[in-house]
Length: 271
Image (cartoon, rainbow, N blue to C red; front, side, top):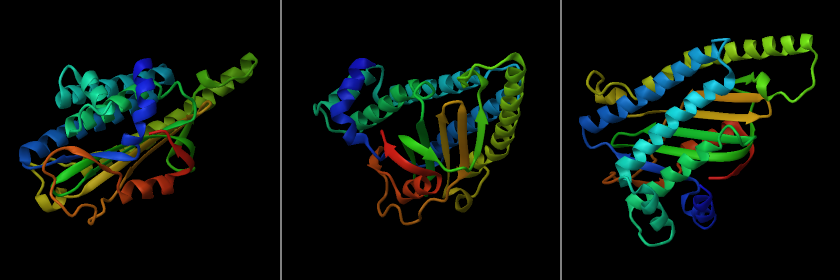
């Protein structure tokens, strides 16, 4: 990871404020995306259930989510570039190759490594935007520093509170944190439907009802306070004027810029 971080010092500008665009040429491709989105929705529901369980520490909730995302990125890396995805990504950043496979491998691997730091690096915001267009879908991942507007849901982790408290205050703190986690559980349980709505089953949903959709998921931590936003996003109908022929990197779209303005403030893009 240290070697990769050093390489990214010179190559990160290639990937900054970029999104992955993947064609959807047929129903089979749509079905694959739909199934992946259903796994993401199921992971959101599992997180909601864990947050609702007073016997599960918040650190375990996030470790469970992080493990799920790590597996997803590793699977995607192997799909794109094979078992040697690290070498493929490195060659792209070194200028030894200039193709969509190398670009996507570098993009996904950078996200994969940054996820390792997601809950250990204080005040780093994780931004995920997935959008469905008639002939393709895009995945926009960003890591930022800054602040999240007071929307979505905020909840506390007693394990992250740095204070010398007596036993009575510790019990009150734990109760307050648990209450806030119940709120977060309810928020996720209610909002995870936006993922399913954005990517319905292509076998049972007419094309006109599934040709556009999207959602944004933002998480961040400042000290003991965690923030979560999960909302539907409408894709810009004028985003693309060409047909996607193969996967590749594109500049982040107006939807990402609007979402960052709506939900974030005083941010600096790390990636």
